[in-house]
Image 1 (cartoon, rainbow, N blue to C red):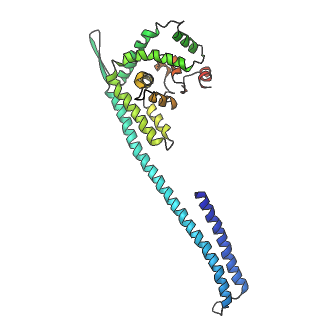
Image 2 (image 1 turned 30 degrees about the vertical axis):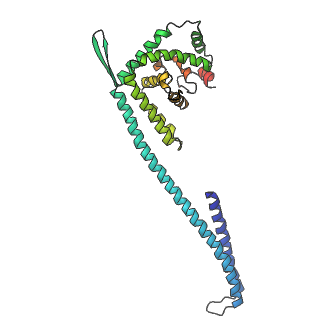
Image 3 (image 1 turned 120 degrees about the horizontal axis):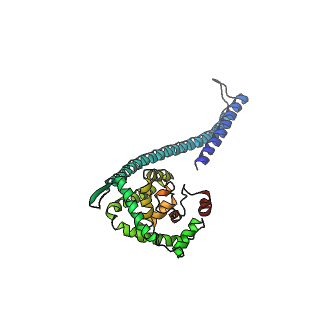
Length: 296
């Protein structure tokens, strides 16, 4: 619409200039209008009719210019409004990001080992929690029969053979048992952290997805997290604790869709083979053959 109006302005401006020049040349060539002399009344009537056409043309140009000016002002107002909204969003976003960091720092757990009490706080707590999850999972993983369905799936992954979605579910269900057992001892420390992270992501998507710059902020969130933080989130969202009220893995789907874990260190995963649990994520630690198998 704006392009059409602009084109019409130029068109009528061109026509108006041609008419104006033609009118002046016509009057000049006829020689019937002499300054401070007599004017032929019949000729003035003809001039009046020509002037009316010229006036109408320039009136249309004026109207179109007003419309174009109003559109420019509307765009400027819209741009200013978007700028203000972005500023307001970023103020809240960075405050929420800071709160998430403070939640991490506030997490702590006292552990008694051989009559000695150890206090794990902040990042040390994250590292300790991930270690405990790994221990819990290894209890069942070490008992896996190579000939069982689960054992066969892990063999396929080691041989770089693509697995089906049903096989992914078998791995998830097996890991879920270990995670739920682990979470019983850590829910009071980790629950608030995971819920807040989910709300931060939802807030980001709600406010910035319409502007199509949401990935910039999602990447900022991911960049603030350590590898072991990412690993705990990684396993939480694919467990039953990642289910929402509708019993769907909304949090998991969001993180997989936006490649949230693409930069995670493979050493932070409890088992490297668990990368198959996020089929959309292009992990940077995957080799060329794995990329061809899982992302071709």
